[in-house]
Amino acid sequence: DGEVHINELKNGNAEMFWNPTSEVRKQRLKRHIVLFEEQTDFESERLWQHVTSAINKGDQHKATQEKFVLEEEQRNAARERRENGTEWKPLLFHHDATTNEWRYKYEDLRPWDPLNDIAQFEKNGILQTMERHLSSRMSNHKTTCINNQITRHKRSAKDCRRRKTSDQPSNHSQNTESSCSTPESVQELSDDDGKYLGFGSLCAQCGKEMNHLKEIHSAVLSLQRAQQDIHR
Image (cartoon, rainbow, N blue to C red; front, top):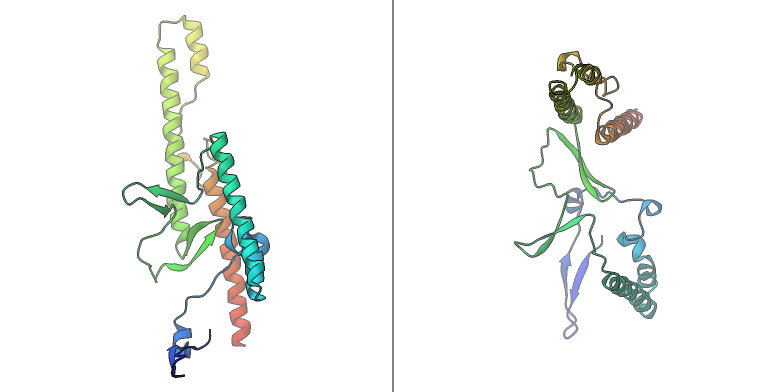
């Protein structure tokens, strides 16, 4: 955040290397951080907190000790996995055999849309984009879930009809037919957040997305009120 100079020890000359002017500061991206108490044990800030503290205090010896402790714990954990035959499965990265590199699973390579995209943030290690038209994306996902459930229901009904027309006694066929249900048409389905669907509730992702949408809506309203107060 401050000026950085290159000092030539031989002749005592000093040269400006970096100057974070007001223009530079205006171009900075807004920094979003996860609260320390909400971080998991293996997130960098929490994992390296003792090393960081020692560096900030200027205690190089303590920082080196804390770094050694962390690395030794990682070596021991890796040794135990090898001995137990446990495969290490990263949660957020996958290995690209073509490039022989580790890549982030949830990377978003699409161009930024200033008309629709509001902000990009990380939640539980997953990169997410806050969009103005999130509701339409929700609707598309919900429609996909409904269609999947309809397909499964139709397949089940078709299996029932096959059993009914098999070479079984007539009374058994009647029982089989009564145990099967006929799929309703899509038009007759209620689309009220999946509450009254004939095929049960929507998938868990829909519920999470709906709750997330409500949280975003509440946050936006709060920001709007704050803006109004600032203008006044």
